[in-house]
Amino acid sequence: MTKKQIDDLIGRYTEFVADGGVINNELYTKYEVKRGLRDISGRGVIVGLTEISEIVSYIIEDGDLVPCEGKLFYRGINIEHIVRGFIDENRFGFEEVCFLLLFGHLPGKKEFEEFSALLEDNALLPEHFVRDTIMNAPSKDMMNSLAKSVLTLYAYDDNPDDTSIANVIRQSVQLIAQFPQLAVYGYQSFAHYHNNQSLVIHPPKKGLSTAENILHMLRQDSGYTALEARILDMALVLHAEHGGGNNSTFTTHVVTSSHTDTYASAAASLGSLKGPRHGGANIKVVQMFRDMQEKIADWHDDDEITAYLEKILNKEAFDKSGLIYGIGHAVYSLSDPRALIFRRFVEKLAEEKNRREEYVLHSKVEYLAPRTIAKMRKMYKGVSANVDFYSGFVYSMLDLPEELYTPLFAVARIAGWSAHRIEELVNAGKIIRPAYKSVAPQNPYTPLAGRKP
Image (cartoon, rainbow, N blue to C red; front, side, top):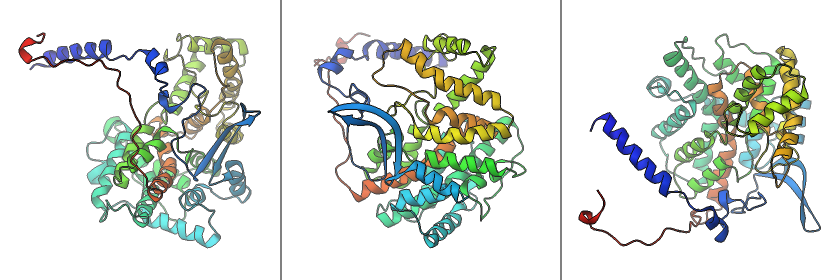
């Protein structure tokens, strides 16, 4: 068949699916289907229990749900207190958070030193891995590159299919340690082969935090300021975990329940995180603000900003999706605690990078967008800025390439995925298999000769 014949054939099949594949919305109501595993109020359907993290977005008063300021707990400890702890002690926090998520308690001094050394010892990739895997057919998409690398690591594991807790912990520590290299080297290979940039591969340095090593490996001169490293560490801490119900972590539970291997589980979760409705949202925020800065003449004019936001909601501006990216969350309503924590440090970085005017614009949109949405849309709960609203801005101020925004999310979230995989295995129950009700009519079988051509 010629390419045109193939395209025509696929076109006809596409029309058939588009015309005949849409299920009547009324049937979802009739059969009380929890679309997206959420009820009509937006609350998630409880499908499991976890001790790893908790999200609080409402309280119950007289039997009614009352929205409250959002809170996030890692292993029962308020994220605010975790952040304040390592900031007050002038140290990095991501490695401590990884230990907390994996093992359920904050590490003592000796435990922390041992765990940090364990991460350092597991950081180096197998010999020739960069040349044979990462630089071989480099992808234009860093998340796909990351998934390919993770799946290839299976071949270097002497015991890849063992789902005993000890073995999965070993694999999890290895992945946490190696994800920064997989992400950064994947980008360096892309930039070299697709953008004709110089190929620079810096090995990780012992004694540096994860955040410091990312900047060291990424930048040609390996240079960075203390504030840059601190705020990148903060980003990793805030993205490390977010409950069992987010799309990629639920994917971890679903895939793990089949007792597949750790590498396949991580690759499946990477595929989920890649989507623009999940981990890819921060790129959309940056692109939206770039468009906003071009279209709005006075960044201090509330009326002009509101008019632009109204055009977005009316599908007349930016990508015509009707979405103000970075505003609103499936769970939080009044506030996302991660965004509030981030915001305190973003202003400092904006000052250092001479981008205070952009920070002011972000602050105005954070204030005006929820009010504009409330005026124009029927909502069952309030909306507020989420963590993506500021993370993309932070990454742009750090001069990180957009191709790395979502992989950096994965560098952090592999800690949470690993903890949830272990929890699913420890509490091994049935394979996760939700029900789907068929609403297709019963049809008789027609012999080939009697069908339409």
